[in-house]
Amino acid sequence: MDQTQRGILGQPLPIPTSQPKKKRTSMMSFFSKVSWTLRFQKRESLKNVFSNLAERAQDPNAKKRHMAMRGLGTMACETPDKVRKYKKIVLDLLVHGLYDPVSAEVIHESMKTLTIILGKIQGKSLGSFFVDITLQTRTLLDDENDNLRYSAFVLFGQLAAYAGRKWKTFFTSQVKQTQDSLLIHLQDRNPQVAKACKTTFRACSPYLKERKENSFQTEEDQRNPKLCRQLVKPAAV
Image (cartoon, rainbow, N blue to C red; front, side):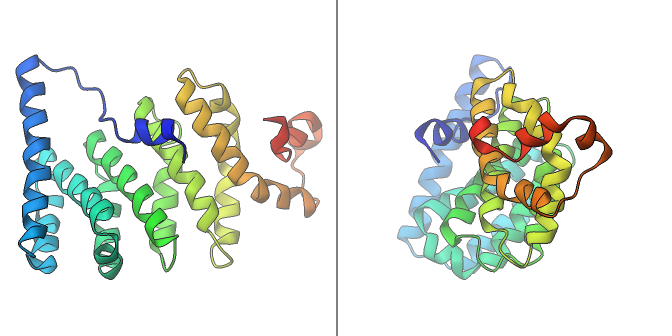
Protein backbone atom coordinates (compact mmCIF):
# COMPACT_ATOMS: atom_id res chain seq x y z
CA MET A 1 0.00 0.00 0.00
CA ASP A 2 1.50 3.33 -1.05
CA GLN A 3 1.53 6.61 0.90
CA THR A 4 -1.49 7.96 -0.93
CA GLN A 5 -3.56 4.92 -0.02
CA ARG A 6 -2.52 5.09 3.60
CA GLY A 7 -3.38 8.74 3.65
CA ILE A 8 -6.89 8.28 2.30
CA LEU A 9 -7.55 5.36 4.62
CA GLY A 10 -6.68 7.57 7.55
CA GLN A 11 -9.23 10.23 6.60
CA PRO A 12 -12.72 10.12 8.12
CA LEU A 13 -15.81 10.26 5.95
CA PRO A 14 -16.75 13.85 5.12
CA ILE A 15 -19.71 14.80 7.29
CA PRO A 16 -21.22 18.29 6.94
CA THR A 17 -21.18 19.69 10.45
CA SER A 18 -20.81 22.99 12.21
CA GLN A 19 -17.43 24.06 13.52
CA PRO A 20 -18.24 23.34 17.21
CA LYS A 21 -19.13 19.72 16.30
CA LYS A 22 -15.85 19.35 14.42
CA LYS A 23 -14.00 20.52 17.50
CA ARG A 24 -15.90 18.04 19.65
CA THR A 25 -15.05 15.24 17.20
CA SER A 26 -11.38 16.19 17.30
CA MET A 27 -11.42 16.22 21.10
CA MET A 28 -13.10 12.80 21.16
CA SER A 29 -10.39 11.44 18.88
CA PHE A 30 -7.67 12.99 21.03
CA PHE A 31 -9.02 11.67 24.31
CA SER A 32 -9.61 8.27 22.72
CA LYS A 33 -5.92 8.02 21.79
CA VAL A 34 -4.85 9.21 25.23
CA SER A 35 -7.19 6.71 26.87
CA TRP A 36 -5.70 3.82 24.87
CA THR A 37 -2.15 4.91 25.70
CA LEU A 38 -2.91 5.09 29.43
CA ARG A 39 -4.67 1.75 29.40
CA PHE A 40 -1.71 -0.06 27.90
CA GLN A 41 0.74 1.76 30.16
CA LYS A 42 -1.22 0.50 33.16
CA ARG A 43 -1.30 -2.97 31.56
CA GLU A 44 -5.05 -3.25 31.85
CA SER A 45 -6.30 -6.76 31.18
CA LEU A 46 -6.83 -7.21 27.47
CA LYS A 47 -9.88 -9.29 28.22
CA ASN A 48 -11.42 -6.26 29.92
CA VAL A 49 -10.45 -4.06 26.98
CA PHE A 50 -12.03 -6.44 24.48
CA SER A 51 -15.08 -6.77 26.69
CA ASN A 52 -15.53 -3.00 26.66
CA LEU A 53 -15.01 -2.86 22.91
CA ALA A 54 -17.48 -5.69 22.32
CA GLU A 55 -20.06 -3.83 24.38
CA ARG A 56 -19.48 -0.60 22.43
CA ALA A 57 -19.48 -2.41 19.11
CA GLN A 58 -23.10 -3.42 19.70
CA ASP A 59 -24.24 -0.19 21.31
CA PRO A 60 -27.37 1.44 19.80
CA ASN A 61 -25.37 4.66 19.50
CA ALA A 62 -23.54 4.72 16.14
CA LYS A 63 -20.81 7.02 17.50
CA LYS A 64 -19.93 4.47 20.16
CA ARG A 65 -19.82 1.69 17.58
CA HIS A 66 -17.58 3.88 15.44
CA MET A 67 -15.22 4.52 18.36
CA ALA A 68 -15.07 0.77 19.07
CA MET A 69 -13.90 0.08 15.50
CA ARG A 70 -11.36 2.89 15.78
CA GLY A 71 -10.15 1.47 19.10
CA LEU A 72 -9.50 -1.88 17.45
CA GLY A 73 -7.50 -0.11 14.75
CA THR A 74 -5.39 1.62 17.39
CA MET A 75 -4.70 -1.71 19.07
CA ALA A 76 -3.76 -3.30 15.75
CA CYS A 77 -1.19 -0.58 15.12
CA GLU A 78 0.25 -0.30 18.64
CA THR A 79 0.05 -3.91 19.89
CA PRO A 80 -0.13 -6.24 16.86
CA ASP A 81 1.11 -9.26 18.84
CA LYS A 82 -1.74 -8.90 21.32
CA VAL A 83 -4.25 -8.57 18.52
CA ARG A 84 -2.95 -11.80 16.94
CA LYS A 85 -3.57 -13.56 20.25
CA TYR A 86 -7.20 -12.43 20.28
CA LYS A 87 -7.62 -12.57 16.51
CA LYS A 88 -10.97 -14.36 16.43
CA ILE A 89 -12.55 -11.92 18.87
CA VAL A 90 -11.19 -8.93 16.95
CA LEU A 91 -12.31 -10.28 13.56
CA ASP A 92 -15.76 -11.07 14.89
CA LEU A 93 -16.18 -7.47 16.11
CA LEU A 94 -14.89 -6.02 12.84
CA VAL A 95 -17.10 -8.20 10.66
CA HIS A 96 -20.02 -7.15 12.82
CA GLY A 97 -19.06 -3.53 12.12
CA LEU A 98 -18.61 -4.23 8.42
CA TYR A 99 -22.27 -5.28 8.26
CA ASP A 100 -23.53 -2.29 10.27
CA PRO A 101 -27.08 -1.63 9.04
CA VAL A 102 -27.16 2.16 9.38
CA SER A 103 -23.76 3.81 9.83
CA ALA A 104 -21.39 4.42 6.91
CA GLU A 105 -18.81 5.66 9.42
CA VAL A 106 -18.82 2.33 11.27
CA ILE A 107 -18.51 0.39 8.00
CA HIS A 108 -15.67 2.61 6.80
CA GLU A 109 -13.75 2.31 10.07
CA SER A 110 -14.24 -1.46 10.03
CA MET A 111 -12.76 -1.75 6.53
CA LYS A 112 -9.77 0.42 7.43
CA THR A 113 -9.06 -1.67 10.52
CA LEU A 114 -9.55 -4.96 8.66
CA THR A 115 -7.01 -3.80 6.08
CA ILE A 116 -4.51 -3.14 8.86
CA ILE A 117 -5.15 -6.42 10.68
CA LEU A 118 -5.07 -8.60 7.57
CA GLY A 119 -1.67 -7.12 6.82
CA LYS A 120 -0.46 -7.85 10.36
CA ILE A 121 -1.60 -11.48 10.32
CA GLN A 122 -0.83 -11.98 6.61
CA GLY A 123 -4.35 -13.30 6.08
CA LYS A 124 -3.59 -16.49 8.04
CA SER A 125 -6.31 -18.60 9.65
CA LEU A 126 -9.20 -16.35 8.66
CA GLY A 127 -11.57 -19.29 8.43
CA SER A 128 -15.15 -18.41 7.47
CA PHE A 129 -14.40 -14.75 8.18
CA PHE A 130 -12.81 -14.66 4.72
CA VAL A 131 -16.19 -15.36 3.15
CA ASP A 132 -18.03 -12.83 5.31
CA ILE A 133 -15.50 -10.09 4.60
CA THR A 134 -15.36 -10.80 0.86
CA LEU A 135 -19.12 -10.84 0.34
CA GLN A 136 -19.73 -7.53 2.09
CA THR A 137 -16.67 -5.80 0.66
CA ARG A 138 -17.75 -6.68 -2.86
CA THR A 139 -21.10 -4.97 -2.34
CA LEU A 140 -19.33 -1.75 -1.33
CA LEU A 141 -17.27 -1.44 -4.52
CA ASP A 142 -20.12 0.45 -6.16
CA ASP A 143 -21.14 2.52 -3.15
CA GLU A 144 -21.91 6.19 -3.79
CA ASN A 145 -19.54 7.28 -1.01
CA ASP A 146 -16.01 7.83 -2.34
CA ASN A 147 -14.29 6.79 0.90
CA LEU A 148 -16.27 3.57 1.13
CA ARG A 149 -15.47 2.68 -2.48
CA TYR A 150 -11.79 3.44 -1.97
CA SER A 151 -11.48 1.36 1.20
CA ALA A 152 -13.48 -1.46 -0.38
CA PHE A 153 -11.13 -1.67 -3.38
CA VAL A 154 -8.06 -1.65 -1.13
CA LEU A 155 -9.51 -4.39 1.09
CA PHE A 156 -10.73 -6.49 -1.86
CA GLY A 157 -7.28 -6.33 -3.42
CA GLN A 158 -5.76 -7.50 -0.16
CA LEU A 159 -8.20 -10.40 0.02
CA ALA A 160 -7.00 -11.47 -3.43
CA ALA A 161 -3.53 -11.97 -1.99
CA TYR A 162 -4.78 -14.07 0.93
CA ALA A 163 -7.39 -16.32 -0.73
CA GLY A 164 -4.96 -19.26 -0.83
CA ARG A 165 -5.95 -22.74 -1.94
CA LYS A 166 -8.80 -23.05 0.53
CA TRP A 167 -10.77 -20.09 -0.80
CA LYS A 168 -9.45 -19.97 -4.37
CA THR A 169 -12.59 -21.34 -6.00
CA PHE A 170 -14.86 -19.12 -3.92
CA PHE A 171 -12.81 -15.98 -4.54
CA THR A 172 -12.56 -16.71 -8.26
CA SER A 173 -16.36 -16.73 -8.45
CA GLN A 174 -16.47 -13.43 -6.56
CA VAL A 175 -13.96 -11.82 -8.91
CA LYS A 176 -15.98 -12.95 -11.93
CA GLN A 177 -19.05 -11.30 -10.44
CA THR A 178 -17.01 -8.17 -9.76
CA GLN A 179 -15.37 -7.73 -13.16
CA ASP A 180 -17.92 -5.14 -14.35
CA SER A 181 -17.24 -2.98 -11.28
CA LEU A 182 -13.50 -3.33 -11.82
CA LEU A 183 -13.80 -2.09 -15.39
CA ILE A 184 -16.17 0.75 -14.57
CA HIS A 185 -14.15 2.15 -11.68
CA LEU A 186 -10.89 2.16 -13.60
CA GLN A 187 -12.33 5.50 -14.72
CA ASP A 188 -13.94 6.42 -11.41
CA ARG A 189 -14.81 10.09 -10.92
CA ASN A 190 -12.47 10.10 -7.91
CA PRO A 191 -8.85 9.66 -9.10
CA GLN A 192 -7.80 7.98 -5.84
CA VAL A 193 -10.58 5.41 -6.19
CA ALA A 194 -9.56 4.82 -9.81
CA LYS A 195 -5.96 4.27 -8.69
CA ALA A 196 -7.05 1.81 -5.98
CA CYS A 197 -9.23 0.01 -8.52
CA LYS A 198 -6.29 -0.32 -10.89
CA THR A 199 -4.15 -1.88 -8.15
CA THR A 200 -6.96 -4.27 -7.21
CA PHE A 201 -7.57 -5.15 -10.86
CA ARG A 202 -3.96 -6.31 -11.12
CA ALA A 203 -4.24 -8.27 -7.86
CA CYS A 204 -7.35 -10.02 -9.18
CA SER A 205 -6.03 -10.66 -12.70
CA PRO A 206 -4.75 -14.21 -11.89
CA TYR A 207 -8.34 -15.21 -11.05
CA LEU A 208 -9.55 -13.78 -14.36
CA LYS A 209 -6.73 -15.51 -16.25
CA GLU A 210 -7.79 -18.84 -14.82
CA ARG A 211 -11.10 -18.34 -16.52
CA LYS A 212 -9.34 -18.06 -19.86
CA GLU A 213 -7.10 -21.03 -19.19
CA ASN A 214 -10.19 -23.15 -18.57
CA SER A 215 -11.47 -22.06 -22.00
CA PHE A 216 -14.70 -20.86 -20.48
CA GLN A 217 -16.48 -18.15 -22.45
CA THR A 218 -19.93 -16.70 -21.98
CA GLU A 219 -22.01 -15.54 -24.91
CA GLU A 220 -21.08 -11.96 -24.05
CA ASP A 221 -17.36 -12.82 -24.23
CA GLN A 222 -17.83 -14.36 -27.64
CA ARG A 223 -19.62 -11.22 -28.83
CA ASN A 224 -16.96 -8.97 -27.31
CA PRO A 225 -13.50 -10.61 -27.56
CA LYS A 226 -11.77 -7.25 -27.01
CA LEU A 227 -13.35 -6.97 -23.56
CA CYS A 228 -12.32 -10.54 -22.75
CA ARG A 229 -8.71 -9.79 -23.67
CA GLN A 230 -8.74 -6.66 -21.51
CA LEU A 231 -9.97 -8.62 -18.49
CA VAL A 232 -7.11 -11.09 -18.64
CA LYS A 233 -4.28 -8.70 -19.52
CA PRO A 234 -3.10 -6.55 -16.55
CA ALA A 235 -0.65 -4.65 -18.71
CA ALA A 236 -3.54 -3.16 -20.62
CA VAL A 237 -4.79 -1.36 -17.48
